[in-house]
Length: 290
Image (cartoon, rainbow, N blue to C red; front, side):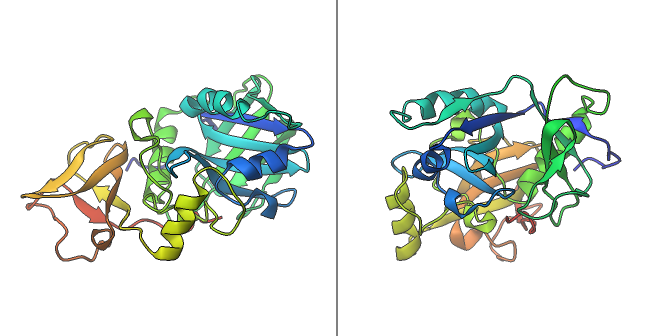
């Protein structure tokens, strides 16, 4: 993982904001997304996502409740256009508008927020908001602001690389096109981050998610993978004649993979180690649950 000398704000150019506005914004999101949107109060946020009817993850995002008629979603930039287009097909007569504000900017800082805490966002300059994304891997803050870029939000390649690795180290996958619609929330261990609900009403994929939860049938889970050589999404984790799992996200020397549940624990003596294989299982950091 790169050294971290950066505490200034920098542009998270791989993130984008989506806004859901209107009288039915909360009801629409509740019917479509996998977490309980109605549990949020003004000023709260949560991890959330959108699933296929078969319970596979299409997109993951942070969801903020601004007020009773306004929700903001922060997702990977590559997902935003596709997600907005897909969601609009389900609006029908609902009083909700789905937009990607052109003047919205997402900023990051590798230092804990002095305004926000846990699952509560705080007002920020330029009419935006600030979130705290700190965890055991260190302090982080995110800002959503509007208007032209300023000198305080620099293009910091090193800062973004650290940010992306911290996501993975805490177990927040970054899914590229090859890994979307492949995994259930349980296979990505998203219960660690309180990112989905098994108690709320219907939503796409809810039956699969609930059945897996209540019948205890999750046979695969997310694991952090340490490797001296680069890994890429879709790579198989093999050792000898055995395939342990599949890489779903990778940044630098950090990767996440879906492996058999019994192999997801770093203490497992049978997990490959240096010398015996080109990778090994390491611990996921805690503290990103919201």
